[in-house]
Amino acid sequence: MSWDDVPLKGIRWAGRSREDLAEMPKPVRGFFGVKLEALQHGEHLRPPAAKMLAHYEPTVIELVKDFNKDTYRAMVTVQLEDAIYVLHVFKKKSTHGIGMTKQDQDLIAQRLREAIQDHEEMRRRQRQQGGHHGL
Image 1 (tube, one colour):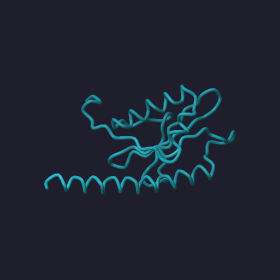
Image 2: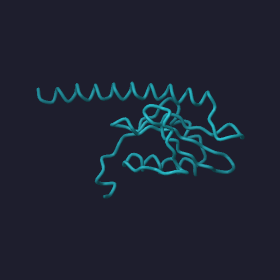
Image 3: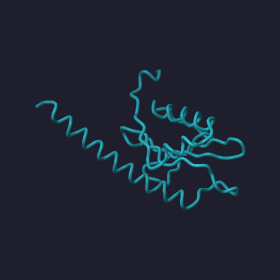
């Protein structure tokens, strides 16, 4: 099966995630771009480049890229049917441990709630538009 055989999911950007990605070093942008494209085509990414954060509902995937002694992260969800939502993109702030700050966790949770609402609204609009085609 090739990518041409799989319907392409759109990408939706939460908050400043697109702008934050644009401000990252070019190798990091390229890495995340390749991974997002793979997710659009339905590929399942494996660690260490990606890991599932199951404590969010729907599940959030954490993409990780180390570059120039820094660690960069992109948090995305692919479980919403019509789109991949990029929730948060950031450079890891802490030099100790592997965890995220509470502020980053809260932001991801907030943007995930907003993504779910956006997705439901998008689906509602599609149903309404679909109902008018037969008139």
